[in-house]
Image (cartoon, rainbow, N blue to C red; front, side, top):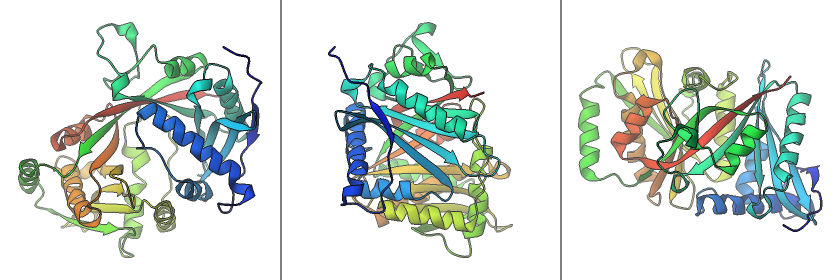
Length: 366
């Protein structure tokens, strides 16, 4: 291995617009991270334009994002993003560390992680989340307990010999949760659509569905904000630290605006309880203007309304609406905690297949 000059770790300024001398480093960072994603996944599922990424990094009202890059010989070779929830009592932060594959194992990731942890400590946060990603093709069946690292809950484990797993453990992180990403080919086979629809119809007589594209109706936005606030309370989180999120109508509108600017507007379906008029469940799809893949964002059924097939109801309706609004979409990706067996069962009924595993790693700072 040839000698490498030590990297320079420098803060990346988020530009106001693209195509200027001031935006060159940001655009380079996006291109480098796209290369990292292609090398990992073997496709362009997680390749994003500079315009889309800029929309997210400029949306700092509810989540502050600070970026530091590693530079070697005037080229960006890695980055760390520190994400800070801006709730008043927040104690958590998230670090996203990436290094170009050809330069891993040379201390660049460690330097970026150390800088990120300094940011977290300086921000007064005490709980850090970091992530590793493991495509399905890199996973293999094993019968030996020491071949995998497992979280406290759920049946999925990460390969113990993964360089990313070893990196996280070497730097004092423990595996708090494994998320399973799953892929669904679209459209659904007709016989599966009919079977799911018949099952839903037999259990959801007290509910009706409402859908919207891009923006929530004014008369529903406040209640929609209230149910979104339940996501950090009702999702499985036995092994991870999460701050409660305060959602208001203004925050919903800001989120919608950000995704429209990314070119990935939301398609949302909710289940409304007819006797009470309250929203009992919802699901969201981020639908790109081009490409063939959409991403499932939140899906939630509130506790009082579980057991009525509402997860299936809203997902099925949202797929029907997706076919109308975006017939170019041919695949759907979704993420669920490995211990969230009810929602995984819903996904299995739709025909989702394993796409990969994501490790949510946790560390406490003094």
